[in-house]
Amino acid sequence: MLGYVIKKLLLLVPIVLCVSTVVFFMIHLIPGDPAHVLAGPQATREDIENLRRQLGLDKPIWVQYFTFLKKISQLDFGRSLRTDEKVIVEIWDRYPNTLRLAFSATLFSILVGIPIGVFASLKKNSILDGLSMTGSILGMSMPDFWLGLILIYIFAVKLKWLPGIGFDTFKHIVLPTITLGSFATAYVARMTRSSMLETLKQDYILAAKAKGLSLGTVLFKHALKNSMIPVVTVVGLGFSVMLAGSFVIETVFVINGLGWLIVRAILMRDFPVVQGGIFLISCTFVIVNILVDIAYAYLDPRIKFKD
Amino acid sequence: MATIGLGIIFLWTLCALFPTIIAPKDPLRQELTNKTLSPGEKGYLLGTDELGRDILSRIIFGARTSMLVGVIVIIIGLSVGVPLGTISGYFTRLDRPIMVVIDALLAFPLILLSLIIVAVLGPGLFNAMVAVGISSIPGFTRITRGIILSVRERDFIKAARASGESNLSIMFIHILPNSLGPIIVQATIRFATAILAVAALSFLGLGAQPPTPEWGTMISTSRSYLYVAPHLVMFPGIAIMSVVLGFNLFGDGLRDALDPKLSQ
Image 1 (cartoon, rainbow over the protein chains, first blue to last red):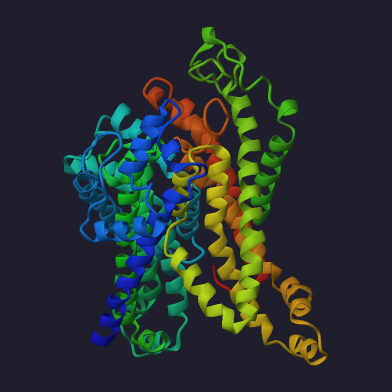
Image 2: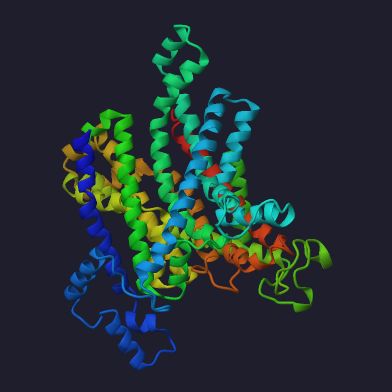
């Protein structure tokens, strides 16, 4: 197991290098002259040349690349073109909020999605099963930003139970969590249901029942653990999706997170912030995926030998 | 269920193809004396928005934008993803390098990949469609490759190879037509996620720009009126949900029909 973990962790280095390369090339893929585009339509020739020097675009590309890699290794992403604040400060201040939101939404999807899925699988083809599966397909069809606004309207405007904006207290976390977690909850419920149905058909479950074991023992000791393997993968990947989804949710609920910063930076063409933010989010994805791989290998040891 | 989905898709396709006939008013016409009217007031079935424009007409015209989004994204995704997946599945030596890149891209959610591309190209509806389209390529590549790998070993392919047919002929005349089922299912479901993705990008201000009647943009510009005129936000959202639901139901039904052994 340890060997597998080390092998996976060593992959981090080349992957992070690839991510850095992609992030570096983003600025060079901008159609036209990047310095001109980023300086804006009102910029003078002098402004454009100053920006070109500031971003290092006047140097040969291989010099730019190695300078970029060197700076990234020191977590130096330059300065924001709009606020002149260090990019690393801007993104690091907001990163915890995004992580907090993604984590709580993932937890929500596990705590709500799995029981619904288990329940639906046990009561297959009943009205409750039909309702929960209909609910989940609706949940997967609904735009999350729209759901967020509807929840704000009901709970913040009409009922006044919860705040609609911000992220300071526990009460503030509730609506963004439900909104961000809704799609994943629906997906986890469906996945758990189908996984449980597959597992419950297996011979060893029949054997367990024949032995006279109670429903609870059959369920929790045998069925659930084995059904959880695909569900763990979905949840782990769900965290990545949640991180991406936070971009939209942070905008809806005006949460001062990394997603909101990146979106604003894209709109204002503040490229150093975009690069720094995308780099950090991408590295987070990579680490989460590796952790999911390791968890998966722990749950199903056969996986280690397939790689 | 699939029939319901198809019915929904059909209705919205009609709106997309004939908006000028179906919509009661001009979606861009502002009537500042009739701002934020409630549904049913003064003959406006779904009310008016913050600039006095008929919401029903804007939603009908928005169907055209949404359907166009789905079509363009699918065209981009299929035209690159399917050939790439076919090559990867058929030629073992090329499989590994192609799939290393594809798997790396698949690790990233669609919305993030799309965001990166929009960050480079700049905000705009067309750029958003291209971004989501390019981001869909890895998914189609992977599905196609998977099918090709399983069809490749079948007897009729071995027979074609034995009779001296060229690789290109085998790939595109024999294998691909027999692999279309799962690709079509993926395309149907991708149509739905494309609409959601572009609506989200438009909501963020990175996709369709006002005054284009696009459902995500409509929700975005109506946000500040949520407290006083929630119907401005409600109706475009219901429109998005119904189209996406239609495609999801139809895609699910197709998948079940194509392989009844598969449980969900």
